[in-house]
Length: 274
Ligand code: UTP
Figure 1 (cartoon, rainbow, N blue to C red):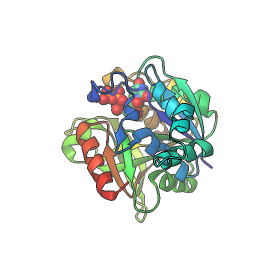
Figure 2: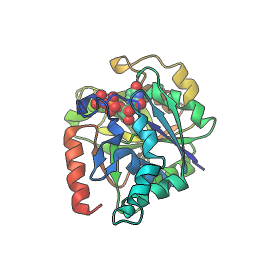
Figure 3: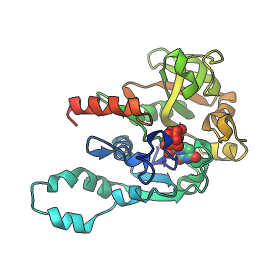
Figure 4: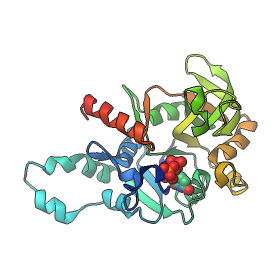
């Protein structure tokens, strides 16, 4: 059972400056819903009700979003706009939210290690809210939990990206273990490789199921690419033991950490009518 989902949300979001100067990137809306709310909904759909959020300075709006706003609710009570808060109210009722702060932004690996205090010693999901996923039937995290239940080891979601974009992602190499699933046993992982050095074009996106031994590995992980502590480097240690599965998820992903991806997602969700 995966009961907790960790949301690393401490990054500066520099690609969205000046919007992210005083507003967390995770609070930028696709239509009327902030990115992180889509993420929490995806986790809830996967049966997870404990949301563990790694925040940082200037991110308090995330905590306020997943709380009651008495004044506002009183103001719109009984009016035509009251229903606009129905979805978020329901999330607040169904889920618990806990927070911890990353003090220095030393990379995704460090953010995940900071979350250890909220996770403990159990397998957990990680969701990067700026990778927004849409699916026809089952959510991406639900699909990944099924893969985890089968293999009982860490799982990363992957998709094929154009070869010239490998330097934006963690890239894997692996052996196909199940043709029907598109699951690979990972043999190698490289963070943001130059296209000419990339082992494949299979890129890791912002969804992970991690086993708790990752925390000890992270503690021993030195800063890697860009001087940041990379989760890819820690996962490579698990992969060397045969303990990482890469899963080609079914659905569509938008890189909402980039302006292009954000606009694409906005148009897609507008047309879809959400
Ligand atoms: P990004 O690589 O998108 O970095 O982080 P960023 O700082 O948010 O954005 P840019 O590149 O400056 O525009 C991927 C995820 O990891 C989190 C981010 O919040 C985002 O969800 N993260 C990254 C942390 O929580 N802490 C860090 O030190 C770095």
